[in-house]
Image 1 (cartoon, helix red, strand yellow):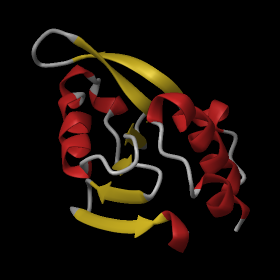
Image 2: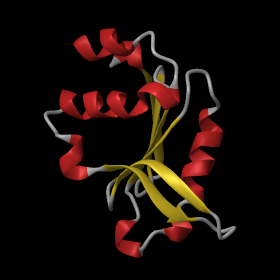
Image 3: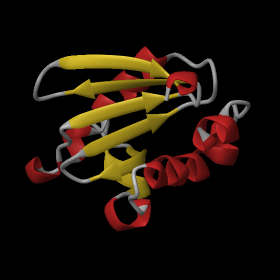
Length: 120
């Protein structure tokens, strides 16, 4: 698949994460700009502001890391943002990724699925 080939060697979150997610949504025929925003500011429990990497209010919160980074920590970071969200904004899904691996948490069903870019 074109998406897999385009992104298989990428590793730098700061340089390419936004383009990666735009391409990801395009695979499904969705314009990311219509449904989700990048770097959504949110107040965390410690009263400091954080920035959600990608946020589709009420549906999906994405925390993206550089290749090889700990996805468990990425998930914990994603959950830290929940306190600053309104009830109707809380996502059904949390997706963490490091370009190579994706881990999708369905918060309503309490399930977790992991897959790799090569299997996409």
